[in-house]
Length: 568
Image (cartoon, rainbow, N blue to C red; front, side):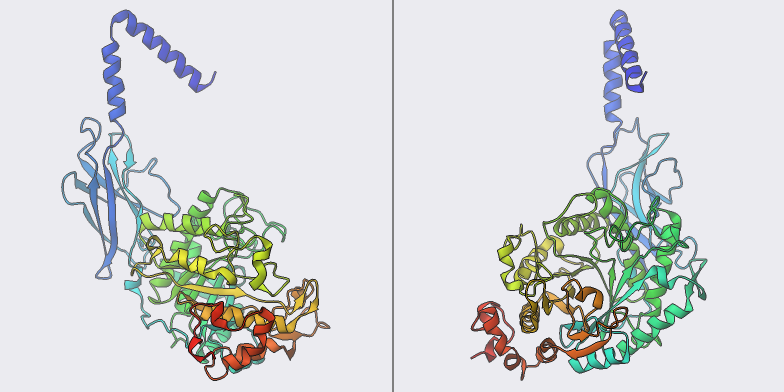
């Protein structure tokens, strides 16, 4: 017999006895008391701030009426929640209390740098009914981790938005400098950097990093920084049998067509401890331009998170998936901003705005952004930013300007795909006040990955069309005030991509060396990209490509075209 049926039979017996004894009024009183037992107040925690570098001051306000004093006592209790703690079940370890009706304010030691560190914690307020504590507030995190930062140099905006995924060689760096790019990408998979050789202590625990692998990143990032390049690091979680704590509980390694990378999580204490330590290690090592290892200015947490191929956590609803991601993102954000106050933290999506979602492993980029923002606000707004990937559709053809013919591109917010031709739909959407950052500004958008093939899947070599696409796309990004960087993929064709008609490089590659990326000859797109942001040469360089696109003036198709005054 199920519990529900047992309760139903018991209730019928009680009703029969009450009918015989005339005690219906007693049942009514007990029922009313049970209804009143639900807490009626809501405590809106308005801020959790670090003060004087060592104290946490938590403030809030009461909304609604106070709960029945016959059921709940006369106090409000403050609980600390670690990212992996999701309820108060079985807990009585409150860290502060106030009498109902008094000012809702608490003060606690931060315990920064100790095993009791509260920097990454959230806080809730609860009431007590004599047997259990019930949460009656929003959950809020520390609002100002940047006040602890030892690196406070201002963020350096690039003199140009021009960026490139470059080869990690002397050729790659020298060529990037010749091209005049100011933004570069480096991928940092966690499965590679953990190992032996570097011991790092954080909050009382010691973690170990591969000195050989980290030395390669040190050299790469230092050389990029020395040349004045703005470095964007993409943080990835590749599979490693030696670090099971980095993967969502219960996961096993998946085939490559299911999971290339895995989602970061803080749902267990071991996962949380390791994640924050690795994030803090990287933020500290690459936190300032004066570092011997160079500086990372932008940190991107994960890759195209709306598709679990790049951020696998197993089938789950959008709400659960984003709840897990949001808590992990906050840990990254707090580790980075508490070290380098003006570094920027991003997450990325692909171009499937309202398209190709199954609700379990793939999600609409729009829904991911909406849900993430809706989770962030109650917990304390932070300066998250977006790294977007607006490839052409399909990626095997370079002409994005006729992508409307696919039926997947429109100028409406319901457009299935947002890429370069309707990029303003994205930036207009993010310009709504509900998405503003903590300073009341539109969040930073970087186009951290896009490329245009020089080999069509249907027509073969189309190098001039690639050059035209790069010119048009760059002009769109450069003329959009909400786009901070346009980072091309790639500097040199990758043989594995060439074989799928995705020859995105500015250089062709040696296909006789399929396991390496070896540049051969520059394409027309190289010359376009070199001159695209030079006032004296930009329009002359791109003149011939307007006919391929079918336009007379760039300003005819780009209303806020940056070089409008130079056009004839």
